[in-house]
Length: 416
Image 1: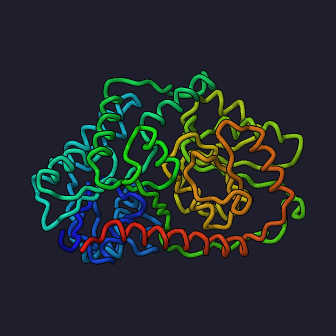
Image 2: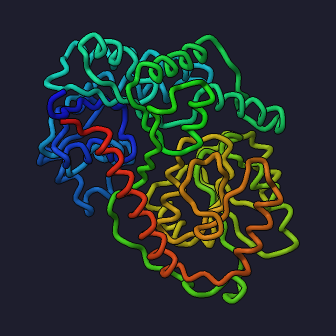
Image 3: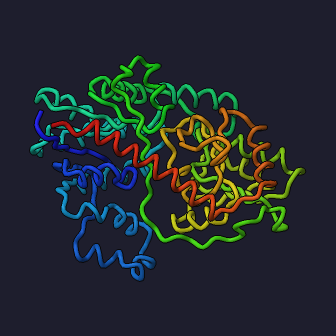
């Protein structure tokens, strides 16, 4: 095999375009295929001026955010009409229709790429559910295939969710079911895993789920890439005092879909446990996927904010004393990286796929542990936390992890 030349195929702006940016910097990126990319035109760049950007409607902001400055000279081919139509389908779909949309979108995306051509690529880098036909075609051309498995194996994810549905019966707006399209999606991802020469995943939780499915362990690599876009730092408040020393409440934050998958019932029940133990304020950010009566039922211990702009979420990380994500199924949750980068201690589960160090950056527990959440919230209430100092130490740790991950990925990809 000659010098590595990668064709990267990705739907959406996965992980803020981290992979294509790295490949471009390393000089191994041949081209990028995606559904929509807003580009680097003079008009687009002028609209991104902060003074103009802040007054734009949210839809236009989302469109403009589909870009990465470091990719200005990369060859990027997109299919905007396809991207628009797929976004509309997803927006209007019922939950039971989502798997079919993912299958159909992945198929069409791959066919469009094959028709357009693979350029000079000798390596295909694709993401789960959206690269099967591309991998099959690549194999006929003796082209290497690398799969980025962004989520735990489908079969385990659904097993865990079905268990949660039984445990919290009557909570979900749309209880989990398994239909024919779901099975198609699972089989599609399994075929991608089997075809791949190498599989990149963000956590050992994902890797273990693949090994349990008898995927060849030697081709699976854990590469956590949670590096965030450079943003201006926010000012800190109450940096060196505990809530007790401040004379006010523990500030608890949750960010993610308010759903059984993210473990929201465990947080809400933990809040009930500590209600008479310590004073606190809890803010929950994300789309509401549990029944309204549950929102009302726990309104005395929690404020449900729904979905809010990303800039406001960052302000909440600054506000928070602790971040809680009791998720039962993830790949490697980006919100945990965001909280860590802001110096906020994290209470999360092994299944979140985070790189949180237990007892250092926060606390790691098994899923379904209400009492552990409650106990750790009380610990943090009583512990002195200098967020500025913690942020510096944690950021160094994050940088070390990401640098090592990038070296590992580069070693896998670059072949002479």
